[in-house]
Amino acid sequence: MPLKKSNPDLVLIIVTLSLLAIGLIMVYSASAIWATYKFEGDSFYFVKRQMLFAFVGVIAMFFIMNVDYWTWRTWSKVIIIVCFVLLVIVLVPGIGMARNGSRSWIGVGAFSIQPSEFMKLAMIAFLAKFLAERQKLITSFKKGLLPSLGMVFLAFGLIMLQPDLGTGTVMIGTCIVMIFISGARVSHFVLLGLIGVAGFVGLILSAPYRMKRITSFLDPWEDPLGSGFQIIQSLYAIGPGGLFGLGLGQSRQKFFYLPEPQTDFIFAILSEELGFIGGTLVILLFALLLWRGIRIALGAPDLYGSLIAVGIIAMVAIQVMINIGVVIGLMPVTGITLPFLSYGGSSLTLMLIAIGVLLNISRYSRY
Image (cartoon, rainbow, N blue to C red; front, side, top):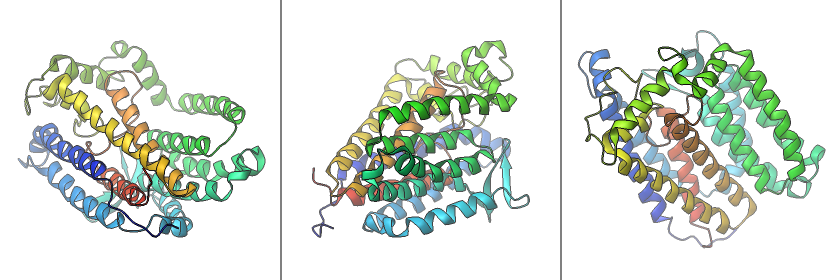
């Protein structure tokens, strides 16, 4: 391993903190009305909790930035075993907390954590180690590709028992990008793609609510008060925003039209209040973050560093594309948060920890 350590990527730090700051402002703006109504006049209820997780996450990010990234290679097996145990525990009635039909949370005092979020990063660290050690075998379907997908689909299966198709989809997509980058054959991906499409269709058909999400995505006005309600209200938020928006804090859709606007649909409120300019600025910040991450991955001193950086960037990119795609009506509703902006302690903390790992790789990256 290289001994020379340079300064972390300053641009990546600035972009991350900028997105975090925008997120905190928008969480308050989007949630103040709902929080006032639901929590006895406490308009700061959601943003206070988000600020606490942001504080913890930023401290963790700067701490992990100084932990050599190959440490995660040493502890990847232990970390992923712990995450598997948590995924099993969350399914136990009385321990796992159910929200919106999914048993995905474990309560810890007044707060709760979502183990599936941390599984995404644990799987990235584990798979990067696995692929780096077996790079020469990755072109073999039986000895390389199939074993590398075994743990991934085991984790996906546990996540689907909750069920949480959105988080599972992000994890699968991230791992596929990592496996492809490591040198797997395209022909194998075509075969797996066909199997994956068949399995995805099966998952949709097995649950009526998923089928409703598909039909509402194709024509939300077919059921405007039911399955198409969220998409329609999201579009009603984005449309009036125009070029410059209605002004910060001036959203109309957050007045109980768009359900819980501080979570998955926060980009709709941002677009309504800050307009096309504000939405474009956020997208450009994400693009800058991904560009810096790609540069770090390309300049990493070893294959493990490159793969873990690719995994982190792929995870962020997939979540951003799915979330914004849902908000603007290009994808079915999936329940995916927008990184750094959406309300959610587990998601925010996980993302900041992941950026901390990426920043440490940048300290050794040759770019």
